[in-house]
Length: 89
Image 1 (spheres, rainbow, N blue to C red):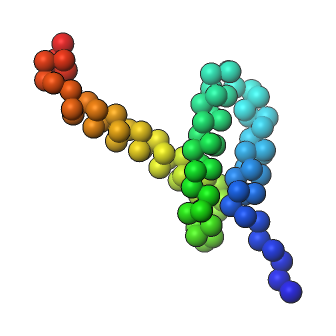
Image 2 (image 1 turned 30 degrees about the vertical axis):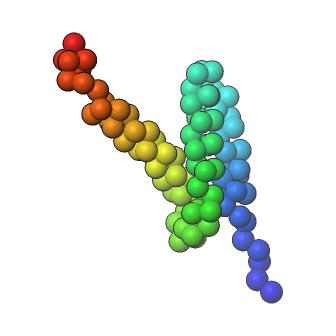
């Protein structure tokens, strides 16, 4: 019988644990930001299961980047919807 592969949630949890010392060395505000990034990555656990060809850390970073880019796109849209007078100050 083959060995059982860890689930995506287990892999993300392992990566998060491997960065525990790094996290503790950060300022509190940066710890909160890092926690938010890991939380964002967990939103894509189902998709991460399909990325078995990639390294777990690569999938984690891509999921984080995806969430950050969605936020940038949302903010750009909000800026585009502002009246011109409020943008030009």
